[in-house]
Image 1 (cartoon, one colour):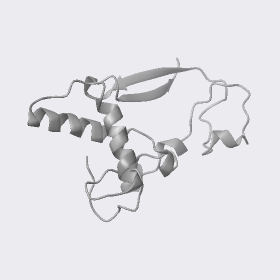
Image 2 (spheres, rainbow, N blue to C red):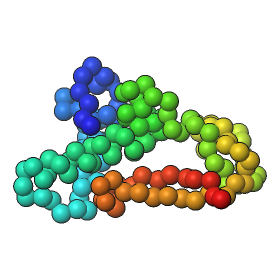
Image 3 (spheres, rainbow, N blue to C red):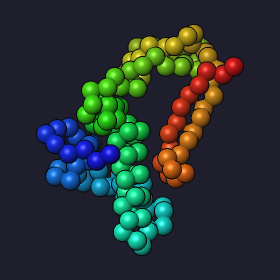
Image 4 (cartoon, rainbow, N blue to C red):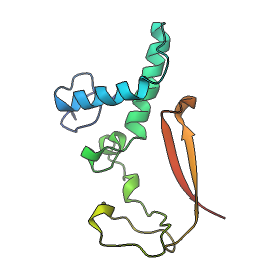
Length: 136
């Protein structure tokens, strides 16, 4: 989904009317996400591929400039996934470590086993969606 409107001051969200550093970073990310694929020669096919990349960019890709949130979480004022309770595979871990920001609660006990699920948007291996699930 390509967002347009009054929230252009939010960095990292793609809009056709944004400018400057935010736009150049967005364009670079889109180029990196599409350069590994064959470029469609038909306009409709190219447009469909760009919509897929932009949806992934806004819905699934966390952004450092947004504090690890996705553009959709910021734009639609959703609770960010990086603040939800998380699985912690280490039984002993540095709770106060500054490299573990933002701090999120641990779901269950530390040292939990989990499975990693990786899906790809529309079958594109360069557009991953990664989920952790508690192991049975």
